[in-house]
Structures are given as structure tokens and as C-alpha cells.
Length: 228
Image (cartoon, rainbow, N blue to C red; front, side, top):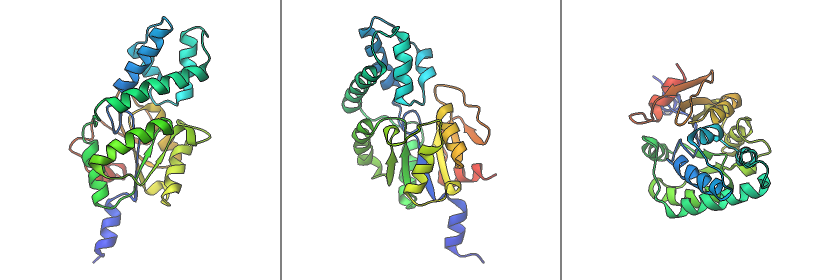
């Protein structure tokens, strides 16, 4: 008969790699408000379609797109800094709102002592401010990888490879959870087992298991899905 330790290792991932915006947190609406406010200062509108185009980041891509939208009236570097300040203010003032099923999943992973890593295109200054508030309800995350800490952000595989290396786990033993096409490409190309829960845009990435929600799922059921 297999030992309990062997049985346990078979049905759970060795690490959980988690996107932040739109996957763990219902924060895309805060980005939308910040983007609308910023664009209005330059006399332009910002639509849901604009946001969908930019979902998954990185910040530099959003800022470059905004520079085009305002016909070069401001440089993308300054736009990026302004957007960081705008959304940072909202992150600090607005209540934390978890995506369905996400909070329970993180709590379970911590109870099972499975390393949890946030892998986001958001910059460190934003990530630190929101992580401290998240940890108040779910406990501390093992590690986090921010968009300004890698040479190549999503959809490049570097963020997820860096996350797995940071906790010393082989990438194919990691379960990654994403909500965007860009992020899902990053995780799949890195070699992780991937659950994609489409939020603001459709996801069509071979190799990812698509779900409508994390609600009703747990670590074991998700690991089973990606290994079937």
C-alpha cells in the first residue's frame, strides 16, 4: 500500500502560482476607473474594449497603448507613472474584493502547506500594498513576482519560470491559475499545469484547462483536472 505521503503528493501540486488582477482579486474594475480618470485628463475616453485590449499587462504595453490613444500628447513613461499613482490610490482606499472561489483556494493551500506564489504583471509598488491587505485574511504568501522584476513580462514564460525557481519546485509540478489570454500563454509556455478562468476576454490557449469559475473547486480537484 502506498504511504500517505506518496498518496498526498500525487493528488496535489507542489506549488500554486497565482495571477493577481482578475484571478485572485476583482481589481480590474479599479484599473478601469484609474484608466478612465487618466484618459479624461487628456481629453479622451476609455472604453471597456480599450481595457480588454490591455488586460494581462504589462504596464508598459498599457502605457504605450494610452500614448497612441492621446496621439502622443504625453510619453508612455510619464503615462505609466501617472497610472501607477492613480490605481495605487484606489488599491489603498477600496475594500479587498476576492474573485469567486479564490480566497478559499488560497486558504486551503496554506493549510496544506503548499507554497503560494503571486505572479503578476503589476509592479512591485502596487503588489506590496495589496498583498499586505490580502494576507490579513488568508495568511502570508510564500513569494511574489512582480512585472517590473523580470526582463520579459507576460506573455513571455519568464515570470512563471522565475516563480517556480523561487520556491525550488519543478515547473511541471506547479498549478498556475490565470484569467487572461496573455497570462495563460505565459504559464503554458513555461510548462506549468494551467487552469484558465476567463474574466474580461476569451482565452484560447492549447494546453490550458478552461473553467467558468473557481467556486466549488479545491486544490485536489483542480490538480486532477489538469492531469487528466
